[in-house]
Length: 396
Image 1 (tube, one colour):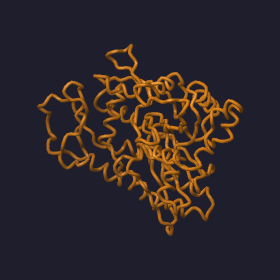
Image 2 (image 1 turned 120 degrees about the horizontal axis):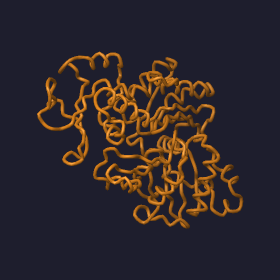
Image 3 (image 1 turned 60 degrees about the vertical axis):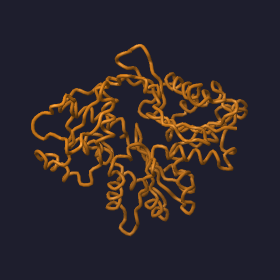
Image 4 (image 1 turned 30 degrees about the horizontal axis):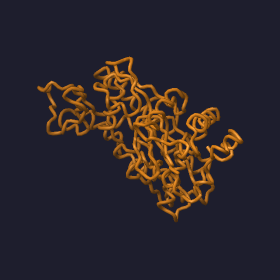
């Protein structure tokens, strides 16, 4: 019996059989501006010669799966001949969904997994629960952990005790990678170059040059200096998709500080954008989002839990999701938590080597655990009892 683990993110799907490694594949469809009529699905993105002005068709809106037609096409592609060649009748699936997912979405997912694809059995679970499983597996002596999952649509903070999630401590901040990319598009469009249609390119810029500042005001001052004194400034060479396939950061020694470049490349000059964009994870109020930043939300979450457990949570904070890959993210979060947490409690923040696939790896471990068969719902169960059996078994 094969088990397929699918961490179905709003931007990237992490998928693979439980005896293999994960593949990270865009969970959406694309249209390129050159061939408007043709739709590309998931990893067919690589076939698009010119991804400028790339149009995204996403199954998720605001973090919830609402566009089932697109999701079906992506799944058909992933499960099909070209990709994972899934034998549905002989496969169990572990699939993730967001915390407190709407019951209508949960029911649609049951129907599609059991009635359309006819998987042998399924387990619907939160990605954070898989991360917690992974964490407790690597640190068996620990009883508590706090999963901070900062993804495409939002950032979730979820406390787990003995691999049970403590619902009263779950917090959500509506800031994720999508918002950061869109904000960077707006700043660049306002300051130097109209890039509002260039989601793909600017997302790449964000990943290549943005970082989390350790001292925001100090970096702001440096970013206003002229010439070579400005150690924050970088020149980013935009791709033209003929000779330059992928944008890159010019090495410091090749930068021209006064005057123009003689080479014909198109340059984006970035200074305070580099750290002002990820700063929104810590201070959403900076751009008018009336919410608290990640450090305060973590403290709020921990303080809502029983007092004798609080020290354990401060010591076992694990970061997952793409935004945690910004250079300086972990250090800044740890420093801010240190100043907010009670002085006598140690604070420890762990950034796994691959925070994007961390929940997937947890799903892989879960699929091999001895009590896996007790937590799934089989197709016979579902056909006999319908949605209610899933509601009882899956704690979403």
